[in-house]
Image (cartoon, rainbow, N blue to C red):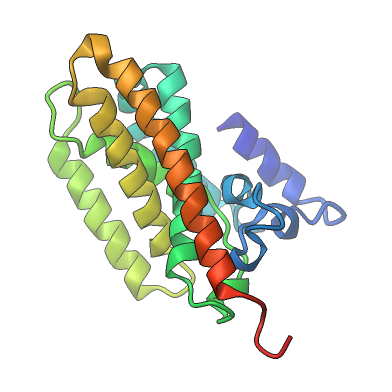
Length: 208
């Protein structure tokens, strides 16, 4: 939260142009792959509402997940959720359409990964599952109705977090750490392959 907040303040400096440097643009995936992750650092300006919405969600939902998984695995879920959200945006974008060259911003994918963990059917999580499901439904409904909200990033983050949550919470405690990191590694490989295949299949821009 501190790092993201500092990044928001740095965005106010026009010379840095952080949105265009750190946002995720599907067309730039292979040339600038770090954008898959740095998208979580930049938010809509100048209003802080976009930032606050994501950070409030991270604070309240993240407290449950961090207690259940520990700091290391919690951080892994957050970071891989950001990447998973970007990869889903890439996979669902039509090559060289407007979506292919649009700047995607925000930590929504990472936050939804945290929520994905909370959807795992287990009693090892201290949360109100009804409230979590309602939050997901309302946010996806809002994303479909309002232009500019990336429901694709929400979906990618949610699926990433759910898979990682299952790996950590649906196996015996003595094996959960090993299984979690194996699944995390497999997800990284899978997302990398999917991103490369989709980008190469898209080819160059029409007419180039």
